[in-house]
Length: 117
Image (cartoon, rainbow, N blue to C red; front, side):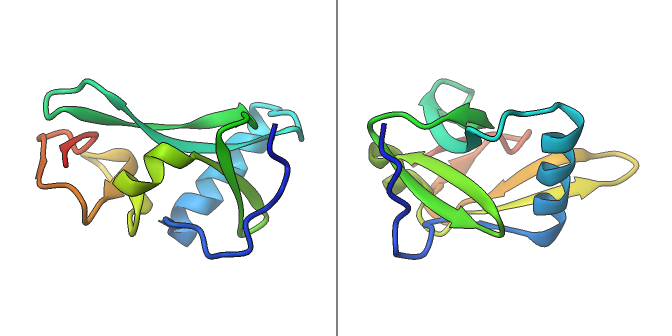
């Protein structure tokens, strides 16, 4: 397990709205203090890749960042696909949830959670 927090800026940004929602989920779900926010990608989805967003423990191949009081875990191999991405949270009548604005995505699906790099 890699406990060293990277001294460089995290490769992603999280909007203040999304960060408030994430802190709310941490409190409501009683997520253990040993967990942090995991952001990544996995193969699949209608455009080739889909995003991973959830709370998890630190793994050996993670880079660890500190972002607005929250530990952020990103597998080193995933950083290339996430560099410059912003995570936001929308709470509207027709749409509610986390959104991903990824400058590396060449194509995205209609739902916004799948992309092709």
